[in-house]
Image (cartoon, rainbow, N blue to C red; front, side, top):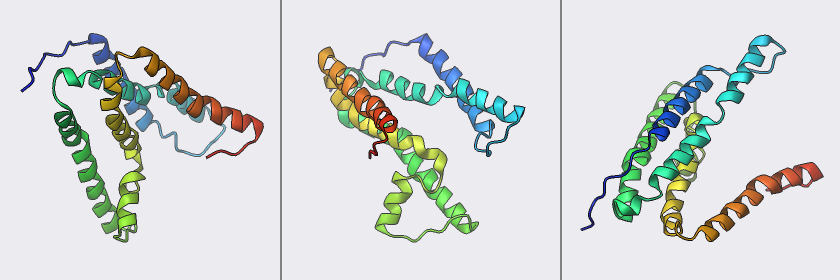
Length: 182
């Protein structure tokens, strides 16, 4: 059995979490989904959206930063169990609750099938606001591999550069040049 080390506490991460929570609340209350209108209220909403937009990516970064050294505290099996209990199980439970409620209220039609269940969870069709779970789960799946590479800074720098090129530079270039991309 591995010795459990007490994890070092970083105060600035607590501050980031608090500020990010407030920003998410502001964005959720902002009603930016309203259609465009040339009014000062719409401009104010866009201002709030722009100022608060950083919050969700920061939550992902905090998760990565706090989980990157999980191997020092517990084994990979325990890591996956903890992630499932903290996020996977609530995601499944609340997705199913939303499905039942929305079908019962006539807000959604659902035909039980394998593809319907896959769509329900991978495309968050029962509740669109759960979109963030899917990239979060993908990050959770990547962390065991990335945590092995933490001592290989050159490999991580290369992977970061390739991801930036593939997901940021390439789409912008394609859009600028009028080239379609998938």
